[in-house]
Image: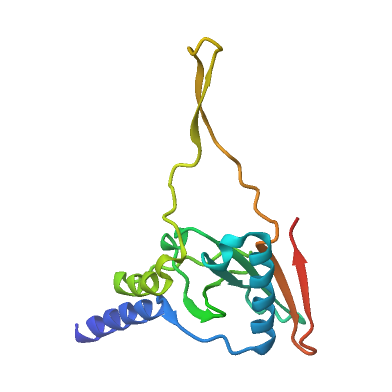
Length: 183
């Protein structure tokens, strides 16, 4: 009986360790330079990114290929609360949220304890806006006489891409960085 309880406690402990959101440092100089260039390009695209936003970094698993694949995108909302990153770091005045991706490229779901999420939100501070759960807005059109012609709910479609999203392919041997920019 004690053995079974001990095994169960070990399983819970190991699963609790796997789901964390810890602060780390980015030490790879090639990656630091690439992130710095990405931040400069985002600032040029929209002045708001100078003081706002968090950078998401999706790290693809090492599949034995010559190149390491990393996605970078910037976001102005706190949408990361629904799926917090495994790690986060500070770099160039920005908070970098580091996600692990599976073999298919999807972000691995991470459930973290509330105190770790609160620590992350404290570090992010006022860099993000509260995400609106319902997308769209009510649009009213009026006739010339001032009477209501029609009222409808309009949803905007975000296609992603643009200067605020990039894929980095870093050659493991030479350190050369190829950038795949979305349009």
